[in-house]
Length: 398
Image (cartoon, rainbow, N blue to C red):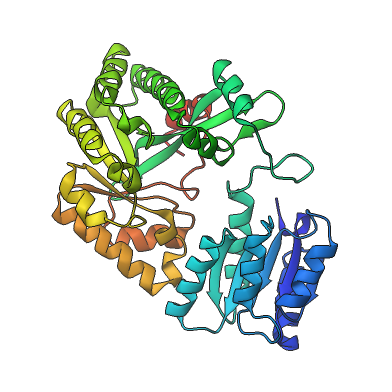
């Protein structure tokens, strides 16, 4: 998807600055560009339009009648599907706060940029929309919604498959593994991203079946890759609800050994919040898995409330820095400092640091300069089917 296929709304009270942004969009090939002088006018445009009329909103913060923050609050409360690029002259620290506020409201944020935005920055942010997986759409543009029963039927038919996103050793520049990410291969709707089914399964406490389906298929894939001469580690997500089952560790171990795979070739990714739930059961499961040789990754590091406590509790082998800290790291000094601290902490604890959500060459270069160990993200490769990943490995990871 390119700019000519997207519809834009520029919300800016300064006429001259608004015309500059519109001209930039036109130069990138944009055809449908609407304009508003403040948040109230922007909402009026969105209210009278059909749901697909605006794909990306470029929004200033300091505006009369309704400022950008109030506009973003309304956008989130109305569950509008438009993605947002924040343009502002606010101090960088305050701009980071606005980013976090937007995400808390559920706004689909592509990035926040200090004025004046450059053509290169604008193009990169639009490209981020093209590749984002935060929208699960039907062909007519509406958000795809499934019932719990439909998801159950999909699991019964084994329509769920792992897609593999490469993980690269930043020092050596070589492929060293992949994360297995659940995808629903729907017979009518195509490939469905996890945001359409995982929240429902977790709410119903029915994640266990999907967790083990992904485990079995990912371990079988690991065995096939090794048979073809690719010695790679596969990372698999463990659900919060699965950790409450005291038999989890033994079941996981039996599944992996039964497939002829060494547990040392499997990394189990656990979110901070998951590790904090039913602490005694979680700790027993995780300690037993580590004892059997599995790698353990603390996923989304920095997004939970007790990161340091988790590192002390559990013998993690990998610290995974959340993509919200990695995104736009080249232009965000506060984020760079936080990532640098996390990488330094990982090094002192003698565990690997992994940055997820690496989207640009600049992200890569900054992370490399900070001595991050491993990277994954769209800059390297998007998640792909097993067949495509096999081809990717055969081609040397390119």
